[in-house]
Length: 258
Image (cartoon, rainbow, N blue to C red):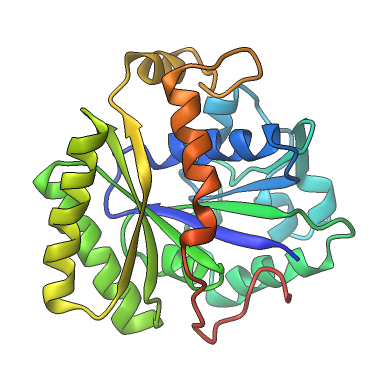
């Protein structure tokens, strides 16, 4: 049975894709068969952090050029990747029917992973919401900035009211300290609970790190088999807590018909 987790944020620039890529690598290093789907369609850039340039993308599947199995790139042991393409292709304006075709197609994979992480577009756009509603779990990335709080709240409100998504995991990125990260979560939780009947789970924090910033510039993920730094430990801790996020029962079609 595959557990699907949509990784999202209220706005861009908070490290959503960095967390998605490194979390996928962390799971793979724990011998979990993992598939990373870059569903930030048309603006996909997860491949940059992975340091690869995939030959095929979801566009090849949507246009009927290739079956889904053929657009999957093997990254390393236990990790596979599906590229979302780039800003010059036609994936920005997919119809609901085309998005549903993508979602349903994963059920036809011959070998299903233990985890699929879905890097969805930031904000409450319909494309992002469709993929979020079709995942088992949703992980929201926020920072301690007030604008991040506001945008994440708007995302969660739209998810809850329009798509019946009520369970969310929260990761605090660019945290100054673990204690400050928890304080930021408590503040965000308090604000959200005043107005919405949703369930937020604190899953962990990623430190404010020059090493992570350097990794983005150098097109190399932080999580590798060669290090045991604080960043790698933080991703490992988050991966161990994914089970704490409760599954959403939205009634939407799912990526894997478990």
